[in-house]
Length: 424
Image (cartoon, rainbow, N blue to C red; front, side, top):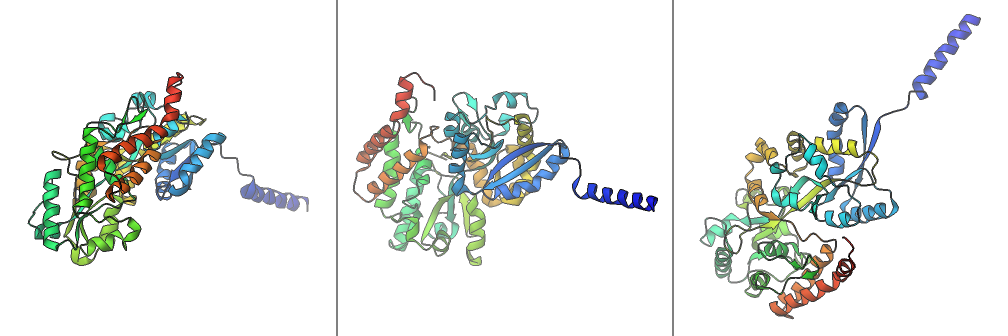
């Protein structure tokens, strides 16, 4: 009886250990906030990372883009930031000013796997604030032209325009052919990205005096402004917001406009939503510039380590892993997000896709937006003032002066801090 009781007790203890008495997980835990759908997809890449780094476990929290900025600011204010996050590169200056991000220059210099020359220059520059690098580009985007090949051919043009003069000739030909009932280009009045892309094609910056004043009332920006506004005043573009048309894909498909400026996310949308009859009748092209191929916006997200993290070395190991060209190629196959490294573009999927070729070309000519925390507010004012100019309430010159005044008001605190000798 005693032997049977002891045997039963042994079995019971073994079962208890198996069920709830397993040794605790002693791995270092990384908290990774990942924005958008990428937060779901990136988890498929992590088992391989954890196999290569058996002492690290990664916990991913997926955040929607609509709530991410506010949650990050709240986390910074409350000292509850994750170890790392993919941050929109237009947000990098804001979080750098808040001293929330860890500089990465030292780690990049010591890394055998990260080569700055393998990254697109304008994208890399968007992560540099002052003399410090605060994010490593993860996936990238920019704006190019989506255009109807058949509509251009019907107007007498075999190729998309390479400069503004050619573009105007194409738009005028489309207008004459359609008697003004259809349009050459559609730039929604509530979207400031097209104007910013065109403004980045000038050599004069949009801010001056160490980014403390607006620099819109200068000859280069006014040339850009006049070109943009004339698209509407000549009848080449409809004076509409995006809510005033059914949707971009339907209107593009029925030929309501021949050109549309957008990013890589729309390649898949156009392929899915346009009628099959238009297969082969639309394409993408780099942006025309004032005198030749032009610049565009350096967009995308970057991997950043938060200064409050106690696992910075492990976070950097994950960044290095996600930055490998082969891993970026896998990520592109899963998401359609364009790789930040030139060498990752050698994959067959990217090299043979005619719709992304324009993005590869354009990424060599992208520029960072002004790197101030107040930029999103300034861009919103650009959109509001420009709509008034397009509708004839202000002349382009008056609009440029108004932009300077509104920008100067937004940057007043920045000037005060600099005048007091405080760093930003």
